Figure 1 (cartoon, rainbow, N blue to C red):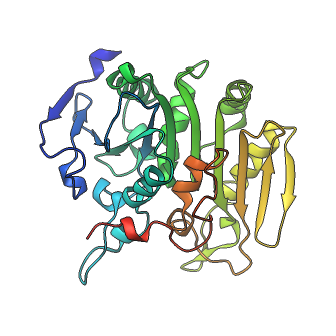
Figure 2 (figure 1 turned 180 degrees about the horizontal axis):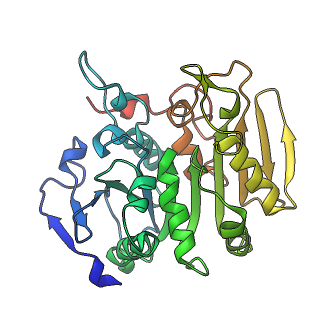
Length: 311
């Protein structure tokens, strides 16, 4: 399968503490048609610390620079101000300095992982190779691999699950940020349950009630096609989860503490698709279930990472 993959490393200087923007990060262009670009935000790596490599699959219609984020000025595209994964990553590193946190932004030329999968034969196998290559790049650090995605980026994660009869032991956390559109009981239930039987593995899901949203006079999603429905289906499929309901959320957790599904109610029928990322969603997907959960931040609250946003 590796014959389908080529890597062209672009040599970029000032890597590490001197970095000031995402354009300075090293990149790899992947696949025979150069259709996938990985961008590596490594921070400062120490061989003395455990390493977590977070592969972040971009949402539909966003570039890596927009996903990383910056302080916007008049005339800037609004996409630069809706995720701030770069600043949220810096917050995570400042909160937990016991680990190396490396973020790998996964972007494709169609700006849509569902479209990319439809347009590539053996797409799921190619995604499997892609993630294996990232693991091999950092293998000497014995990394934990985290798969995280927003929006259509969840398609990459489900493609990876499809390609593996059993998820590899180096996959330690999966985070869906309003990204469960492609979940299917027949394809994913058994594999996720098997993977979660190892209590050191963690599943984090954040979604909102998109089923009540009307956009341009039409329902935003079909009755069974949105993340509200798909995330509730996942919770039901995982079984033996404890459900909790508050005025704001529906939550499911398991006794072992390695599964958490958090669904935001939506009585005003607003679109919270990107807001749930902006309101510390990425931070929560990475730190929830650890000793650093809700430390110096709260999910669904004001930005805890504001001071880390680059100009």
